[in-house]
Length: 447
Ligand code: PA5
Image (cartoon, rainbow, N blue to C red; front, side):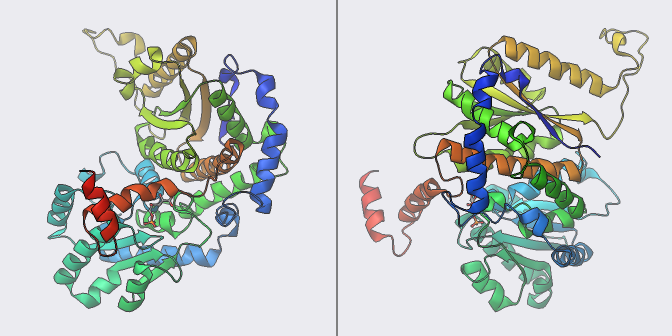
């Protein structure tokens, strides 16, 4: 079994190899700051050794709870926002059939999401869908006070209790939250729900390898042990003892900071595999929320190629030259489709007969890489031998470790998110929440 790999050679026409190599001592210092807890945000470093410290008993508890939900529910609603849902959604989408909804004879419950928006129509349609279904809820909130999931849970809890009664609803609700604090912990204790703890020292966007990600993933029938095993190997690969040139997290952190310094202020995460869309969404939260502070940080965006080559492709190729791209490339597809012969050949595609569809995709990828480099877009490439749990586990840990190092190089605290509070304060003031009287008055004066 190989490992995922990072290739930064196609950035060297834009930044020099020497300049990237010169980050070695700074990266080493940043990596040490993470491991000895001497840097900013050092009370949120629990993710660092999470893969290697998860016990067999913890995994079994998650698997047993998943089994209980799977046996009772056709649909499981995962309630959460940000780090409390993106990791689970990324993995579940990566390993689910693209036409999941239409699959007959399912063995896995359908996983749907709520609390990741405040869409009234969305919630209406969800409650309509659930009306004649056996459903359960995994309610995830580290703080236990986030408005979006709390609102969704209030609505769905009532619907579940009205439908199956309080006693059975209790068997179908699992809460994942802080060990002792917050409204969700109080509620879960009062109602007697099965609970899992999000460790104090693991922030939301670093929590995919805690029950936050692992329980919904296990409910969807995906192998959480392989996911963790992949992360364990990457934890070792990105460790303190690995030389700079062989440590992919160190290399990625260094090269993106050097690109940023030279004016490449936007990083687009690119995939050529539609199932990876939400891996990029997860990555966007990780890097955007970790680095975008103190009026600095690379702006992170994501595109799905070749789809978005027909929309954003123009901008990437010829827009302002402030972009670099990081491509997640999957070497081998899991399924095979060959291009068939067509006697009329009206579409002119007979030259592809006998080739696999993935060969066409790979040439689109290579052609795009060359065009982008020619057009002034540096290219970083992360290669996965195939799309499976083990390599996705590696990818998650690689990105987390690189993010911690990269944030420290930038000089920010990669583990807080003070800016997220600004909209919440205004929203509560506008909704006239008790305790916000002064803010209500002040904000109304601005309207
Ligand atoms: O990374 C973070 O900590 C945040 O983005 C959270 O994931 C998000 O705000 C959800 O918070 P909570 O799980 O407390 O409801």
